[in-house]
Image 1 (cartoon, rainbow, N blue to C red):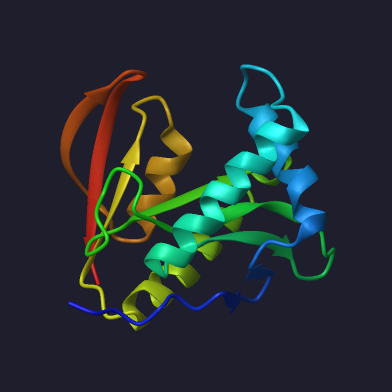
Image 2 (spheres, rainbow, N blue to C red):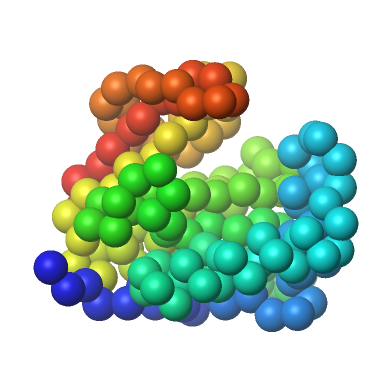
Length: 165
């Protein structure tokens, strides 16, 4: 089935989700560094971003840079990716700086992405979350995702959640 491309500019009451620009690349590098395991080199981060843009061109799906509307600052990303899922039923993904946690930004951004996913003509989304990530479970449950099954990869257990659109 052919799908409409995902909208690349979304706005909510407090956020703007948009395509990445050069000013976001350094911030993305810092966000990746917050995960632990060290800060990627500038070149490695550029390669990560280039792979992401190539996948966007191939799939019509995107991880969008999330900026707070009033402050204008980059706080993370949110969007759709094939990831561990499929083109027909993609995965919703989001990651925010710790300083932006606990304010409802992830839920607000993900709700906008759900609307964008529906507009592409898709009927279901997935999300894969590590068992320790309680905040992500709360976001997904607020958005109507339900636990489906568990699996494991090289980094350990994953809990899969799904939502019909």
